[in-house]
Length: 80
Image (tube, rainbow, N blue to C red; front, side, top):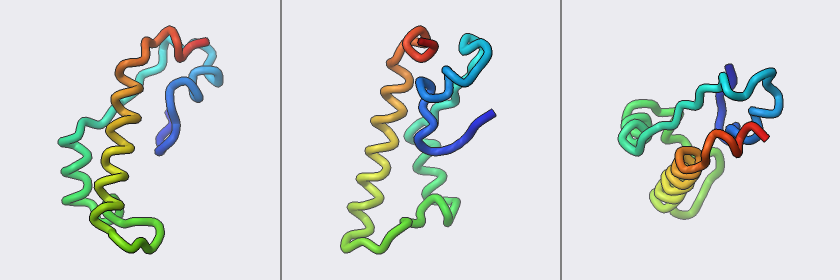
């Protein structure tokens, strides 16, 4: 089991004995919004920024784009 931002399936698959057994959980936008509302650490920004609201919107959009890419990408492309 691995967890963390940036751990994309195509990076994890080569480390597995059989990538066909890999399960990837992808958060929905609703789940991400709930995290931001209910988990203080999820809403925390790692650096001081001039516009925190814009930074959160940008981070949310980045996460959505990554999740969409993971869902669209066929499993065969992640297993080499």
